[in-house]
Length: 54
Image (cartoon, rainbow, N blue to C red; front, side, top):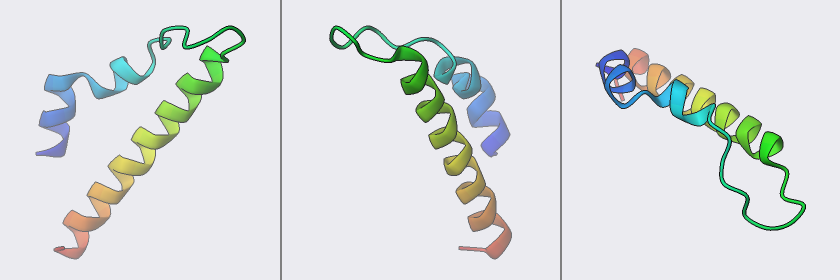
């Protein structure tokens, strides 16, 4: 189910897009890396909850 949702919403593809420039000096690459890391943590948490029956 999680794979289906991510495939249809293109989670991995979307987090890798550079975010818009929020302000002068905004580190877009660092923001993208944070989004990738957050997605990784969310997917790992989902897998754990399914595995553990939570």
